[in-house]
Length: 412
Image (cartoon, rainbow, N blue to C red; front, side, top):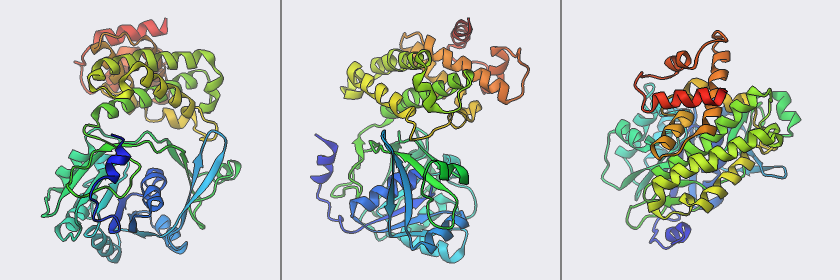
């Protein structure tokens, strides 16, 4: 059954009683969750917790209105959202207002830099959610964890450590929506972007994409207020497709682009050699391995045709000139991206587990290590083994000998 039809067929007695509460006001919260909540028309309030006083002040001065710049394949348009209430949990009066909103919230969304922020500080996200749930009057509460972690929902639930009398469900999300915050004044002018709100020199730029997978809501008689998300009983396979497909190829393109001296991701589109490496790594390595692993699910994505369509769409989106992604931004934090379990080496290990040789993925990993060596100021003759000892947290990574062999082969 189509997931949207499944949502609409539920006995949703709270359709006009939804209240949205979000933590963090970056491009994903503003350009996806809050924007879709506003668009749905189902929420009586949309409340945001944000610790940046300048951003909170700008939103309040603009009467809760903000702008998101949306990049399609033929240009940029602006999306205006109204009626947002923004509170700073570091301010006592705001904190009380926020806890009151959380006590009525039917949907709570955390969109933070990482899961490490869940329990930071005396007014942490976990403690505020706990306080809200303790006095909740909501029929039910869905809590979406939008951080880039396959187990974010479970981690958040463990941090909150409270089970209220009414139904609560923590949901994982798979967010393949590319986005950025543009902070350079000249760049905002050059790209003809509209700032978030008057008085703040920042602009949200997001791609026109909202095919988001989430854990299926299992609360009887309750349906999500945001109807566009695609519910799945188990989102882990789709999370792996994002990490070992989307994220892996994005990093591969960035490191190969940096190796060739490109500065913009859009420039790579015209490099036939780099694009062929990326396409082969995506379809014949990442795709072949994931299809072998998950073909039993009978999901369209994990079929040759479905995964090829997924790959071709993403390759076009990653090099979209209107999204204005830079090589520097896509390549940043190589220490994390080259970790033994992350996008590049994690994908290579998945391939080897499934009997697929990731020779093209190894070319991206080799370029990534070269990028790391330059960024870290290491000697130019630093070996792969020396670099990996700095990048990896253990000396006993599965397939370590094979991974090193593939790196050497990629360099030759």
